[in-house]
Image (cartoon, rainbow, N blue to C red; front, side, top):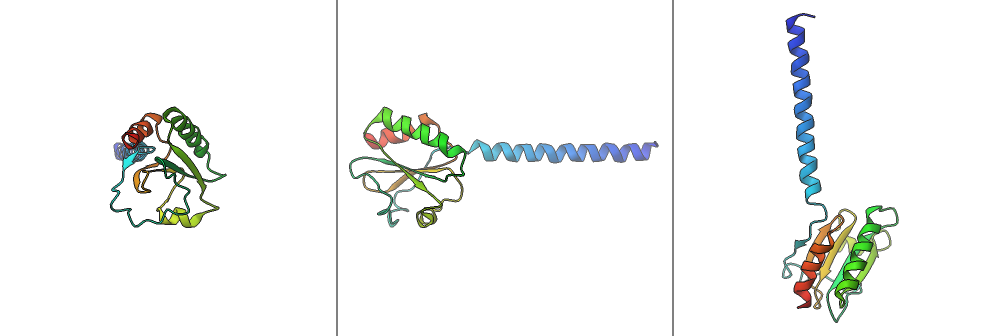
Length: 146
């Protein structure tokens, strides 16, 4: 093999490694946000119709969108059940996205699992896509229970 061909092979290998590094970086960025509990602007969701969601009128409500085919949804259910039990005064509503696509559409649920925290007045305060961390949920809910 001549030096010209070797240079082309090396350039191809370097390019392939560059593409792999870029893909790994993008994947890391996307998964880094998975499950993060992010605050919502309650004023921007004031007009949102939540009457059919089964929200509690006495405290905050965790609303968890799931489906029978969603593997991570079972883990979200466990986390939410544990946090609700630990804190007390927190309701948990699970909505099957396949059974209630209108609610999913109204709340712009684009992936599963998706979890919302609503305050006692029915305003959306937090949102998480993916499996939220129990500590993040507790922190968000503590503010609403105070």
